[in-house]
Image 1 (tube, rainbow, N blue to C red):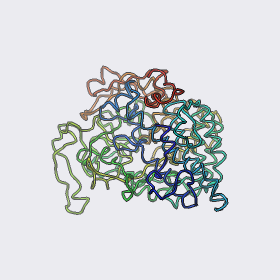
Image 2: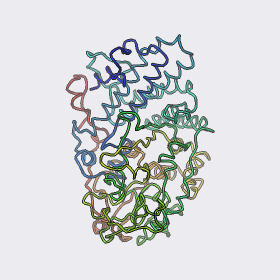
Image 3: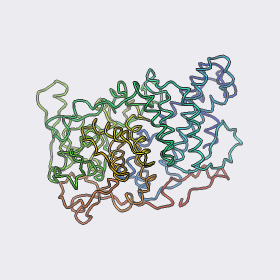
Image 4: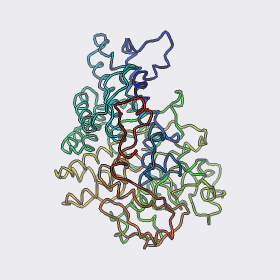
Length: 574
């Protein structure tokens, strides 16, 4: 409950009886830092299916799909209920994180004279960034929510909702006030603690979402300036050479950005939520839910046919226009990010040949070669096609996985692969979109987009494009570059296209079928594939999706909150 969460707060609820109390805490700088770290840890606690929540969100949109269940089918069929765990957990855990912040902020002034002014302002600023970030997620998911700026007593239960627009402006103002009290980067802490780049990026993202495009572009420009020497795009590793190739050649990987090595050394991560197996309750099991059946996983999440067909060809043209596209060999000559971020048939995934068609009774296991125990792969039974709970979409995510998890994947396994909250690639795209939407287009817009495309091995975009043409390009890059980062749910709503892309059916290729060129009719200005349904049904399975305007823009307020708060109204349609 919001009242209880805001009252009890942080890991301080596990202090010994003779330890500090919320009335005097923090009494020292050490206690203030301890409370700050508890607030950061709060960001790691929100999950679904033992997967960090950010990596769930794209799988309830047009680009990702989850194993059918009440929790993950209901949000794409306009049938979420007010007690559905998927919809209630973000409310609970974001407010708990806010409460952890207040536990320190409420009494921080008490130790101001005993610590340096610089340290005081930094701790204050970090807590306010965490709090603002939590509110930024709450307002996108629920719309108007109670804006609480201090700890509450047990009698403070009748909290009114504050308008989303008001909270957006409050976040922008907060970040304006605190950003410069932070160092640009806190890389020495693994970017777990925020710096001024993260604060300005949060300001830019919220301003973009609230259509304050000049504010967004200015904040993003400031963040990019401060990022110089601290953050940049990380080149893909040499495994990019295996993109557009078969499993015989090798396995594409992006673990130098999105895996264990990436979180250790990549300069692309601006803000990271840290997991650690040595800390109680600080793990997840994402590796198991992402991995293939042969990879000792459950194949729970995966890209849709919509996303697969959205990847351009290497000439920079959509597949309905490019002469390089061949429906008989659909995974050749494509944007390398298709293979870097997704796993598709005839590729290698987690050391195995990945095939979802039952005609492949056996597939290659490359682990003997990878481990140095043999010179050739060995054949194994193809459970990725035979298992009743194989991938339901026909594809799997490669992004945000690491082959190291193969050693520990199981239904009871644990992983401490970190979670990226802010990434430099998104910062560049925030800047580009804000400039395009403000119609203040200059060379810097092209440079921001081309940095991302060049890293991917894609051609630079043409110059002297119109605003609408650049808008289409930005939407392509957000769909592709940020796939499975947790941005799509918000993007399709703020762009006003959710009622288009989430009504009708999603196409899935669970059986790993080949298809004809007549399946695809067009790829529209938002880079949404348009299908010939009569033809597509010959090859693909489907999932019905329903989106109701004036309802599905947001999720329901948890019913238990309505029950205890007479001033808390429910969102329309629930």
